[in-house]
Image 1 (cartoon, rainbow, N blue to C red):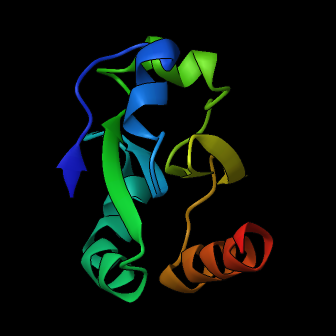
Image 2 (image 1 turned 30 degrees about the vertical axis):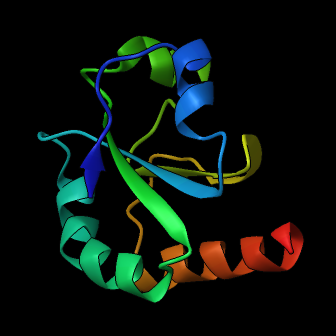
Length: 110
């Protein structure tokens, strides 16, 4: 998974402008992030039409604030630069919950 360098929301528009992108907000100290991380390669493989990008919340705290990401792990999905959905809260997420979220997007995005 690609790691997002430190950037602003304005810079992020360039990153998400083409195709489907999924931002995965997490932090090294977050136990709920560590819980979902082992499932991420499988999720990425299942949803190959998305470009998954890891966002270190601590490194990108200003971006997280700009995007109203106050809990982690969190996911924000984009299609051609437009946000199409978010799974943003402080709760632990299972692989099934993340897949359910992404499946709900594909019906809206197509």
